[in-house]
Length: 479
Image 1: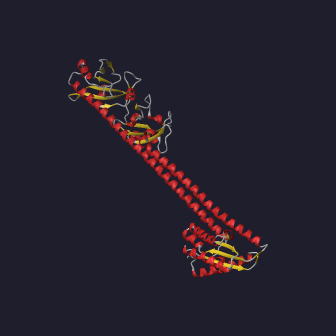
Image 2: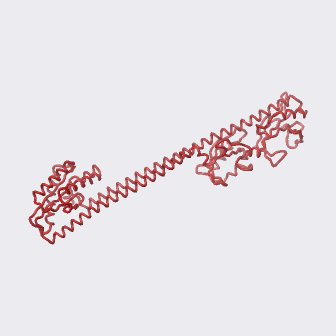
Image 3: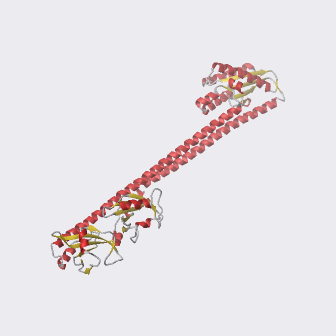
């Protein structure tokens, strides 16, 4: 019965097979879980590195945007400085003296400024240009209102002389004895500025927008041929984590931020950063393609991607190998067990039909296999079985040796009891040198009608030997 088998250290073969299946299944599960955890770790680290690289790209874009905003302010201040110097000279003359005023206006070079044209507005509503042309603009400009504003920079307006053109006016009053006697206008043509503005960051491959936060009007655009409105970005595909609405909340309030959108015309992913300029409520938007933004870290990205591919391939190969190895090992043990068992049963059936004289049977059981498997692992248990099989083959012909269970072997021989005992003592001593132990029983008769009764007798003697072993080794640990 099962209780008797447990007491003697013998396990039911079905129970052993179930245990082995569970162990193999556990090994496969642990291997798969380890592989999945490693893959997830690599995936997480690569994803995190990509996020950090993307953030670094946005940080670099933000730095470049702030520098351009500073350059725009410096340029506007430089233009205002030139206009202020011009206004101070004009204040020392009679502003109605056209010749004197024109000489002063023409004496300043505007080639390094945003200003293309300078005009002087007088209290009578006349506007004097540098080429000497005079216009009555009293219907468009109110001198008192303009004088009250002092120095300022206008938002985007249409040109008085060419309504199809858009301009910004840098305005400086001409003051004499604390009174504004005239007003200087430095006119900046926006379409022309957009065409000629040079972008230094990203080897000139970026684009620039200058946006009025009050109404979304674009004052400078190196991306498109015409000056539109920032609202035209509405409806464009935005990458996860970025929205048009967020940008439209921040820009009017002078807050910097990032956008990531997809170009309708090229399909390229674009990185954009916006920053307040410090002039009126303007914000500058600097944009660049993802490829250009990541150009400095492209090697890192490619290395990380290649690493992820290699690690994934190695993991998959390892998992595949482990599954194949475990399955093959299991099939191999199963085939070996089945092959020996089939051959053993065939041998018994053939013996039933004849008399064997003389006949000897040795029944061997490896002590402590279960404990070794539990304490040292299944591989250590396999080593025990291999050692038992090898030492038995050293003493007995291979064809006379059968493995009939997980830890059980049977030897059929024609040698007498003394020879069989001597050989088994040699096997037992060799195994003891390896810290292993076996129990065995020997049954011998001069003539036997079949081998089954001889096997039963040898098995009983082996069980007696095993009980004696476990009486001495009560915790069933191997020697």
